[in-house]
Length: 93
Image (cartoon, rainbow, N blue to C red; front, side, top):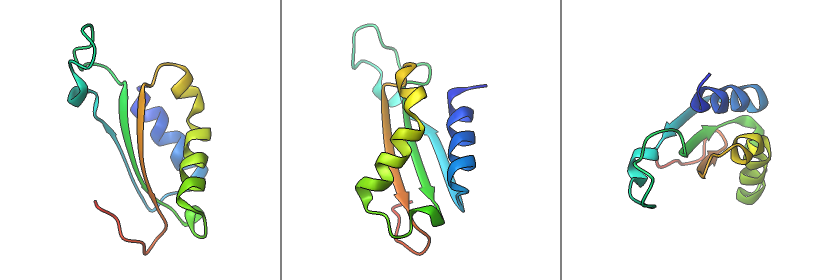
């Protein structure tokens, strides 16, 4: 199972989102280090809308997602961009 699939599964099981996009942005970061060519699954973006975020602060939402995805971060996920929202809130996507 790919990292993208594992993240999608974890987020779906934990938050039952009405909208979810897990985007591999690793290719956008090629050249950050001399030995990194942008392949693999090192930089991911999560866009998620879920009832579970209603009433939560932005920081609490980020913490909840980061805590859930800690195993992936510990296993080598280098960067995680998070765009959480509750239903009815404006999103940029």
